Length: 300
Image (cartoon, rainbow, N blue to C red; front, top):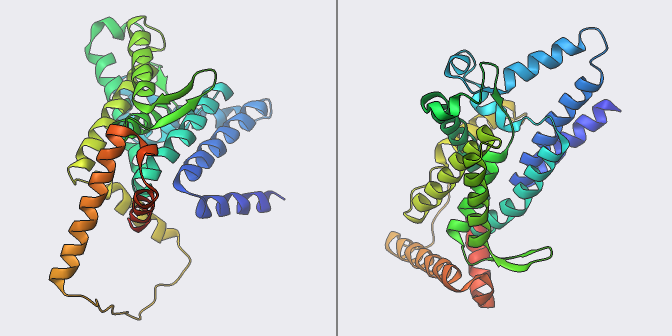
């Protein structure tokens, strides 16, 4: 039974889109911690729970981080409370789907990771070097949760397609830009009131990364390349498929000049469509423009 569940999870991770994979990974880790917490009365289980919690959560102090640098990555997949993981993952699903509709879906996981890293670093730097914040933490304080990575995705989507309309319950259609500004306003207000300072500082660090990521993307610079190469390499290590020694040669049916011309024309079309979305919203696109954008997204 347990083996079947594990195999089902593996299948979902392999076959699902990148947003689904991130959600599943977060849920699995949350369930492991929840089960260990429930069974902590069993001899040895409490020790395992404390060990994992201490070695996966991000220490806020620089002294603690020096001894556990890997936690800058692991913390963004750790949740201990149901409301925390629920709101993080449902927000990740909504905005991850929007962003992947307008960019290559392979940018989601790198952006999530970079947003989490930026959030963790910003929190540690501010808490450790600005005295007004340091007094609210002790040597055992830690940071957990996907919030910084999710905020990076929210701000990235709003930066790319600010006029995209989403329907909010009890409110109706709202531009993505206003949603992002509201999120930032709440985070800044919470920091000013010293409410969940560590978490909200991490949100702001993730937001900054999301903005920078899309600004560079618009300039033709892909900040996700390095992480994607690393992920592909890691995936290859665990792949059971043997590499084929046969080499396949592909012959291009057009000249180099014609190929480059077609590529440039296509990119110009996509840029024009994205500009139109930014000014007038996604619904202003014609059917042909939507199909062009969809096909281009599938080729990346």
